[in-house]
Image (cartoon, rainbow, N blue to C red; front, side, top):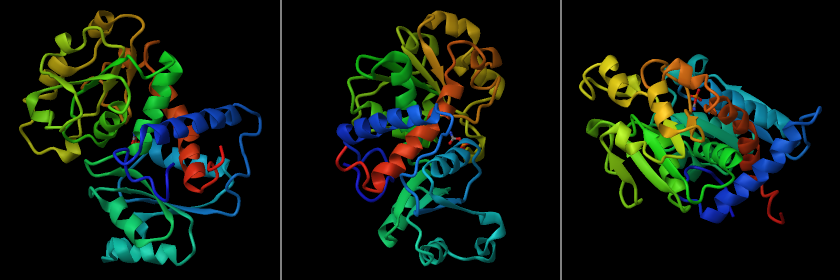
Amino acid sequence: MMTKDLVGIKDLSKEDIQQVLGTASSFKDVLKRDIKKVPALRGKTVVNLFYEPSTRTKTSFELAEKRLSTDVLNFSVSTSSVVKGETLYDTVKTIEAYGVDFIVIRHFSSGAPHFIARNVDASVINAGDGINEHPTQALLDAFSIIEKKGTLDGLKIAIIGDIYHSRVAKSNIYLLSKFDTTIRLLGPPTLIPEVGDYGVEVFYDMDKGLRDIDVVMMLRIQMERQGKGFFPSTREYFKYWGMDMKRLNLVGKDTIVMHPGPMNRGIEIASDVVDSSQSVVLDQVTNGIAVRMAVMYLLSGQGKNG
Ligand code: CP
């Protein structure tokens, strides 16, 4: 049972994850109705605190909060006293003084959500911290895989590209390793870190690593987090590690292609692959709302008897 916060997948049990995914499935049904709103969290207040840019996660949390009937406060870091030097601690304690129930935080520093969670009574949800974790992305990815494949168990999943800088990759490895999956990491040696005891297979040859794969999970090359020298050029990167139609044909018609976004089309993934029938990129976006509704609902304690 999830308790006060969701700061990472590492701390969740397989049962916690299954509970989130099951609850998300019920919320997905709600989202198909004419009236896509439930009163589950009426009277609760959520603040969205994004210290880094976001398209999907921020809008998806905001929609999830509105669908649950919460009051939503979108905190604009760039127009706040953060630019005058206010510390994260003081900003968060100020927000806490309003009596908010949830703080959704994205921060460029790994561990920022954990620090906040230790210092406030509100439930803290990690919307991506540095190169550490992005737990709700991994949960919506799992939900999207199950939606297409029926299960996680028995699947071979390739996570491809800039694993070193990817919080999405780390949360997915933590999640998928709790199930009976085969996880392959594909990429240049400079972008694949030591990932510890998670039973992953590492391939430095894309075509070999793609053999018999059920799920292809592409990652964004994170230029903003990289210094120079991780690979010679984006053209060479695409040649060796890009997902193009030739490679899509190699994996077969039943293999699904995922990308958490934002995408660098033509660098890690070809446009025709993104727009192909095997791409589930927009399904991932859609599923983000139901999964985030489920996380907030369960953290509020509402799922205790369910
Ligand atoms: N997947 C993801 O985190 O996208 P955003 O940065 O747009 O939120």
